[in-house]
Image 1: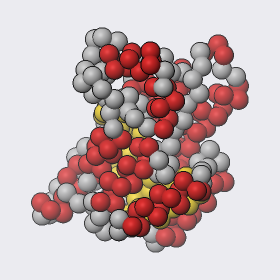
Image 2: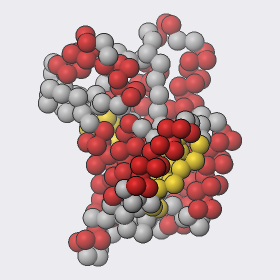
Image 3: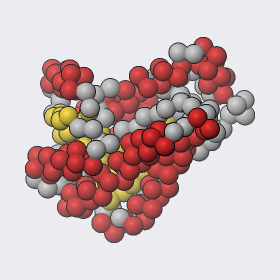
Image 4: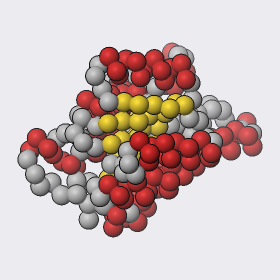
Length: 265
């Protein structure tokens, strides 16, 4: 099932004529993903909670000549999620080729210190939002007849990382959701994959890496001996959306500089 790799070589390596939704695209990895998809020819809609940050990014993309639109949306809100997909459906005439569930956040605490509110907030933001947006987007993805979903997970979904057990649990769940949707929605020509970043320079990561001891522990555990860049994640996300990746589905691929496999941790 799914699109094949037929066609010219150039068409296999571009996203010209395709539509995409990227959640949380105003900064960090999401911002890099929007740029990567737009550079390859996709028309992209993104969303963010902060209107000022979103407008700043939209202005930059317009200057660069990218076809990107955006709307203010808190994906932790069920109503906002429904409004987002309704907007995307109207803008793209009921069809969507690419969905990137990028939004994620964290609260760094020890397990015994988490509150009920912390748990609900992280589960809703990191897992439920991606699950529900995928549900809502399914008719649009199916209608495109060649669609791709990419979830953004984390190395914390695969191995123990001392940044919060709830965060790790939500990312492990995203990995499993990827596998299930890949099998369930293959009949609808929807491929589903997951990208798991390791230690990456982002606004969220900076809150963790500002502690020199923590930063050094991450770098010492990373085989390549450095933090990654957001563009090193976005390039893989874009590849998984290309026609050239037409036989890849159900995979979680880590962009971690060898963090998981290195024995130093």
